[in-house]
Length: 161
Image (tube, rainbow, N blue to C red; front, side, top):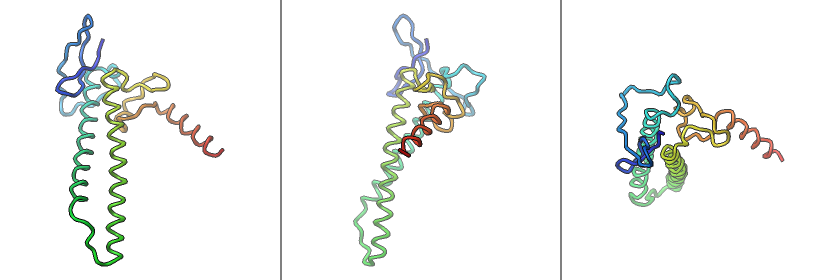
C-alpha cells in the first residue's frame, strides 16, 4: 500500500509493510510531468505535486517577507495629500494581496496534508480522480471539474434567492 510519510519535515511517498512505514526516496527527472499513461497518484506523481506545492508555498512566503520588509520601511512621508493617498491605496492593496496569499498558503498546507494521508487528487464529493490537467493547473483543487461546476451552479441558484 502506498502511503506518504515524513522525511526531513515534509511528506514523501512511502511503502507500508506490516504496519511499519518504510521511506522510499523518489528522485524525479527534471523534465518529469505526470501522464495519464501512469497509475493515478502513484509515488512519482505524489512526489511531483508535493514538490510543486512546496515550491509555490516557498515563493508565497518569500513574497510575503519582501512585502513586510517594504511596509516596515518608515511611515508615509509624502507632504502632498494626493501622493499620500496614493501610497495608502498601494499599501492597502498590497495588504489585501498578502491576505489572499495567506489563505492560499493555508490551502497549500491542506493539499500537502492530503498527500500525506493518501486523499490527494481525489474529489472530496465523489471520490473520483480529479484529473491531472486540473491538478497541474490548480494543485490545490479538491473537486473534480464536474463537481466544481455543480457547486458553482448551486451557488448561482441560491445567490439569486
